[in-house]
Amino acid sequence: MEIISVIIADDHIIFRKGLLMVLNEISFVKVVGEASNGNEVLDILKKNKADIVLMDIKMPVMDGIEATKKITSLYPDTQIIAITMHEEIGYFNKMIDAGASGFLLKKTNKSQLEDAINAVYNGETYFSEEFVMKESKLSINKKTDISLSDREKQVLELICKGFSNIEIAKHLGISQRTIDGHRSRLFDKTGAKNAPNLVLFAIKNGLIKA
Image (cartoon, rainbow, N blue to C red):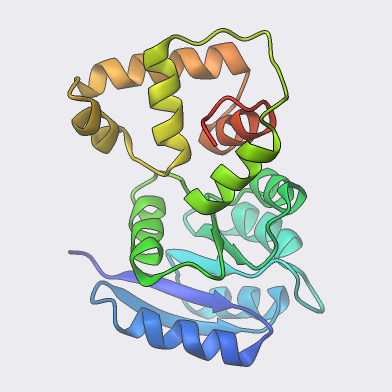
């Protein structure tokens, strides 16, 4: 397996060091830098290439939202995973709009962290299932005129759980080409530009089971 280079960005040193310890236990991850704000992340990226930044949202000097915008513009090959204690949909929305490909809560476990890093490194998206289900429950009474088939609902729910197209195909026992078709129709029906926007739409409109 290829080694994935990671930068940790968080202004709380105890959490940062704890996350470093967990990442050091993952064989395919190499931490190439630590930062306490967005400016420091940008300084690190000037000297060291990184595949992924684990980005806290609320930091001094430059927060994670602004840092994500700059990084996705200056270093498009570097992917961002938000990792935060804030469960409000507003933070999710802002980070996704800024260009993040993943969203994790700080209470995440090692297995979810590994899954998120792998998914985002391989061009997929990953969102904390706990966060998605919580927000979906809050949106349970919201209604949309969009009509989805049972299969489209299944595919959408698995996308929201962070499954890749290959994993969805295997889980549902159908071809990846068929999944690609369902995914394309989901984008057309919801008007979503990408997977993060699709997840956000699903949450806001209660399209997935809480």
